[in-house]
Amino acid sequence: MKTIAVIGSGQMGNGIAHVFAQSGYNVTLVDVREEALAKAMETIARNMDRQVAKGSLSEADKAASLSRLSTTTELAKGVESADLVVEAATERLDLKLKIFADLDRLCAPACILASNTSSISITQIAAATGRNDRVIGMHFMNPVPVMKLVEVIRGYATSDEVTKIILELSKALGKVPVEVNDYPGFVANRILMPMINESIYTLFEGVAGVSEIDTVMKLGMAHPMGPLQLADFIGLDTCLSILKVLHEGFGNPKYAPCPLLVNMVTAGHLGVKSGSGFYTYTPGVKELVVSPSFSK
Ligand code: CAA
Image 1 (tube, rainbow, N blue to C red):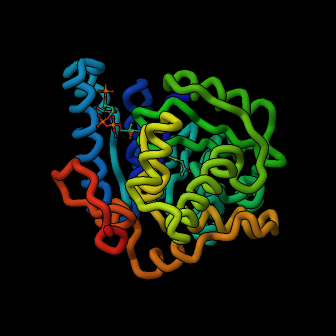
Image 2: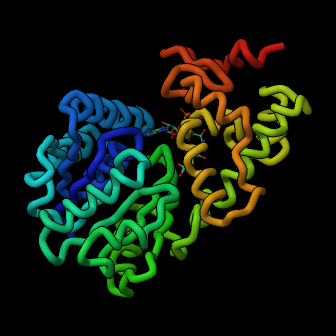
């Protein structure tokens, strides 16, 4: 493994490119929009600056890491010499099926195709290719440079050889891989999303306010963020789409998304990325401000 292509340069894609480049791999970041690539490169440099300021990365290593990163808007060019492709595009099944069919056509036969999907079936994505034994889930957590976990998801047909390579590779990135099987939500989101959904129901039913719910979980359970702040951080649209996958995948009403979450997403209140969710977000302001709709 020397050359990695990362598809999608958003929040997760730029973090994944960052950790691969910092661990010595040559990385090509691919996106359909030039502006998205420019923004991702700025984000990576800024996040590396945080590490330099903390003393966990030297200026020389930062420069070397950045020199291993390149960008392109042409998928064929970006993946032609890749040993591994990590897809981190928008969480839409139709989009992922199209990307994986294209990757299967454009990548070398030995190339491993991984998806960073947070809940879409790896088995279904793999079925869009002619190499379902070489397709696997590599689910990083946000913020990727900070969070240690990689959930490694074996599709129904993923080979032992490919699983072993990806487990070892995750360790080479300084991460801790955990191998899981391919069922709705895998492990991380099967457990996390019902907690977030329940916290939204707790607010919806008037049991407590936004700050109160988050404070209980932060101080009572030692979570670094309360569940409502975490939902904003992940993106309320992402939370809703994962809950829908759980609800449809298991056919169990316990996963039904809270109507308040559905309304907020429909109204475009998506959390940090839209500037408003359970809290409001203003660039440069660190203090948490509860959204006017939820303040007493
Ligand atoms: N790149 C590099 N470093 C970063 C960073 C980034 N993007 N973001 C934060 N950091 C570093 C900071 O420099 C800081 O470093 P030190 O510890 O060395 O000082 C450290 O991370 C903590 O950052 P801050 O001081 O800015 O803020 P904080 O203490 O509030 O921590 C946080 C921020 C790490 C995000 C913390 O709040 C946290 O752990 N939150 C929960 C995150 C979480 O649960 N993530 C999983 C989400 S679910 C998911 O991703 C999967 C899914 O499918 C939905």
